[in-house]
Structures are given as C-alpha cells and as structure tokens.
Image (tube, rainbow, N blue to C red):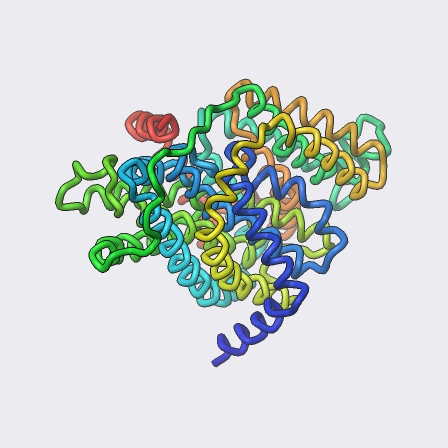
Length: 499
C-alpha cells in the first residue's frame, strides 16, 4: 500500500505540465543525440548541466534522465538502417538489425527495438520502485567505513569495465580523485593544491571539467574521423509484427529485460554490458545459432530490451546510495550538487517528490518514445546528413555560455580550455576518461568517509576489515580486480571492446 502511495506522489509530480514538457524535451533530445553518432548522452548531459541550474530539481533530473534512456532508442535507429550505432550500447544491434534491413525487414527490426525497449523500460521502472526503498533503509544503517568500502567497490567496478587498459583506467580514476580534492580541506578548511589561485579555493568546476572533456574533447575527436553514412536502399517495410515474430521475440525480450535489470545496478554495468551479455545468451540458447549475424530477430529483441533496462536500473545506486555506477549517473549527481542537494539515502526521505517523481517520469518517457520513434524515422535519418563541422561551432558557443553562467567568472572558461586540451590528449592516448569523472565526484566523499571512520576508530586502519559489511564489500572489490587481471579474462575483455 505504501508503494502505491509513493507512486501516486510520483505520478502527480511527473504529470505536472512543466515536468511533462521537460520529459518530452529530454526524450526528444535523447533520441536526437542517439541518432547522431559520436555525441552520446554523456557529452550532451555535460553540455546541458548549466541549464539545470535555473530549473526545479525534479524538472532537471526528469530532463537528464529522458536524455539518457532516450539515447538508447535513438541509437537503435541508425544501427538498423545504417549499420552505424549512434550510441555504444546499440553496437550489438548492428549485427542482426542491419541484416534485417538489407532483407527488406527494417520495419520489423525497428518495431522490435521500440516494443522491446518499452517493455523493458516499464519493468525496470517497477524494479526501481520496488528495490529502492529497502536498499535505502539498508544504506541508512551504514557507517563511514561501509560507505568508504562501497565507494571503493563502485570505483573499481567502473574501472574494471572501462575500455582499454585496466592500469590506465585506474590511473585516470586516481587523477580524478586528486582533482576532486583541490580546494579547502573538508575538516580543517586549509587550502590545498590550489597553486595560490583564489578561484580554486572552492575546487575545480564540475561543469567546466565535464564539458571540456566530454563536450568538446569527444566532438573534436569525431571531427578528425568523419564517417560515411549511407542509408540502406532497401524499403523499410511494414512496422507491424506478425504473430510468428511476436512469438519469436517474446522470451528474448523477457530475458533481456532480466539481464539488463540486474547488470544495470552493478558498478560499471549499465546498458553496454547488458546488451553484450543478452546477445551472447540468445545466441547460446538458440536452436540454430548460425542464424545470428544474418538477420535473426532475436538478436535485436534481446539486446535492445537489455540496454534499456540496464540504462534505467543504473539509477538505483545513484538515487539510493548517491554513488554513480557510470559516467551518466555521475552527471546526474553533478546536477543534484549544482541544485544544492546532497546525493544519498536521505533524498528519499527529505525529497520524496524528487525521488518518486523521477521514477514515475521514466514510464511516461518510455511511452513518449514509442510514439516519437516509429513515426519520425524519416526525420531522424535526414538529420544524419548534417555535417559535424556545422554542429561544432554551436557546441563551442553553448559550452562557453554555460560555463560562464554557472561559475559567473571568466576563470571557468580557462578551466574549460584546459579540460578540453587534457580530454583530447587522453582520447589520443587511448585512455578512457570516464573513470576520471567518477573519481572526481567520489574523491571528496571517499576522503570524508575515510577520515571520519578513522576518527571514530581512533586511528585503527583495521576498522575497514573488522566490520562485516565493510569487509565483505572490500572482498568483492578485490575479487573483481583479480578476475579482470586473469590472462584469459583480460584477453576476452579486450576482444569484446574491439568488437
């Protein structure tokens, strides 16, 4: 009964005219950036962070959430029609979706992606509603030692699943932690690592750092490697699925939803890992695995359901624990901090309208996406003819205006420039910048909980291993890193990212 009361509160917030508008804008922009390869939800949310400063917190999160799961829908459109995934999680959809399009079954593939994503999004919304309250109550019983261990697990989980070398990813995470510690000491107020620059006393601007690395750095990287985009010449065909096709996709959609709902909660999981695991599962369970890669509709249904479910359940650790499981969730936490809200388990009690409003808006957004995507396929495809060189000046201008509006200082523009140069170098060195952003946000919280735990334990470092929950979490983190370090696992991991 209490759950239904919470959902009723959430719906009252989500159905407010202002939030409906922001939800629509979010899913519309999410679909758009999902269609345009190379931009992605991380870069887009980084660009839009300054906008959230002037709107209510509920509307800000509804907008950013819509962009994230909307990108999962948009990415499948270009994956099927162009063999070019607009979003990384749609890479698996290319394998069978494009082959279906070449066979004149593009309509069936697009309908499968839309319906599978809607089902997965609906189920994932209820998973969030059911799992969040008990997880929040558990988190309320955590002490500083448990929080420190949990953040270590989250950071190492994201690092182990980042593309490229694990050592480089760890280096980026450590660098992010150091950047997060710039400014005033949390306990003594003494300034540190500011290089006598007064503007750094409050720390490095999150907006400028995120915009520089993901907004400018990634787009410039795409300008240097333009891709040919040729829409399939085969007809799209019917958008209605036959009864036989519905029976074929039913169980893959259910299995993909389950896989995504579980993996999305894990640190570093989210939509990309979910889609890969779902495709592998469907291929192994198929009576005739040779059909996969040649237009098997199950190869579209499973991954598309998994990536949408994974995208939405990744909100669970962010909303309940205040810990980002991927770079997009790090942006969400950044938006909360900009609004003056401390992420964590207290949000559900102190701001229930924010917590449940965002959850309710997810179902509303998924419904909007089904209505938006199928009728507007022609419009999305035409947008692919817009060259990056026309988009880039607008993005640069938007970044500069946004950073200045948040920092109210010209110094923010210098931080933006340095972050852009650094981000470009990082991309050129084949380093994954996402762990840096996670480390930047978690660094101050790691330090605060570590020092508080040490004060309470009178300097005994063993407090992290004598407390059962803390020790269990650290053990999981160590096992995770050891597994990734195994030669066979490392080889398979590298092969997956190459594919």
